Length: 153
Image (cartoon, rainbow, N blue to C red; front, side):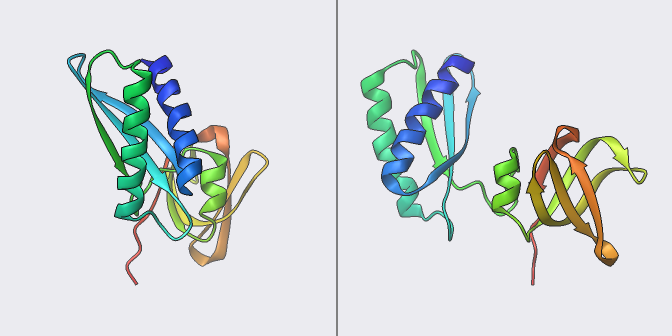
């Protein structure tokens, strides 16, 4: 399935460029009988329903022409949401200033996770500002899972 996911990702990325959005992630789920293809989009200022609909129509037509998914499938296109996952250094860099929850492989200060505001992401480290303006530096390879936290102001 990883070959199929890679092909879908390549097609989605080419379609995204035409519509001014970027592909955040591609997921394959479901069973052998019915596959669910999920494509998550983002752009500066957020993705609209119209962005998702236009992208979905274009990608669906391209997937039908290419015809490499040999089972029935459902295509779902959406934004990654307010609590979107952070999977790459680029994700962290694009979200500087936002609050994030980062789960680490080895404990930091006796904890398995850190919640803080992303202050920098570069090289191979992510910097979070936690309570009392203390900065925590986390090597990217020590991050097992990360996502933005929803903030209510």
